[in-house]
Image (cartoon, rainbow, N blue to C red; front, side, top):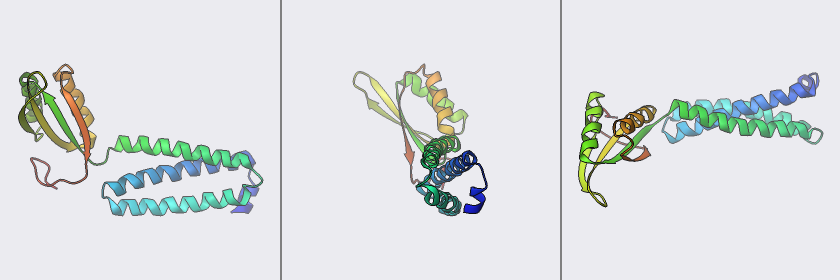
Length: 180
């Protein structure tokens, strides 16, 4: 490998190391998210790919680090870019399940419930007392990839007069349309 890299222009070596590091860290980010979400087999496959890329990149860096600090800079830029890209990809893939807790008055609760029924979403409504008025809490569990769209529509229907708490669900069982 070192003979091959020695035959390439140093700027090209820096770009190759940077690109490989971006790939490695992007894979690492996705692997970590899959592990947290319980997708162990996919995480293991990504871990194998990550380790392969890491071995190639680190061997290049270690053999030339003392002579080429610019290469280290490109390595670090690749790392930072890979973290950003991995996080961006994970948010687009939106693995997992979300729990939405909505607090709304009776009028907005009806709008929310009608929307949820129209979209075949399960929900639970609890009556309660807010600091000044009677309020309702609506609990919804749905795939994370659908939660942003649902929240936008609910907020539009309620003219932003709804309190929302969104969190990730690690485990659940049963529920309307959500048996796992």
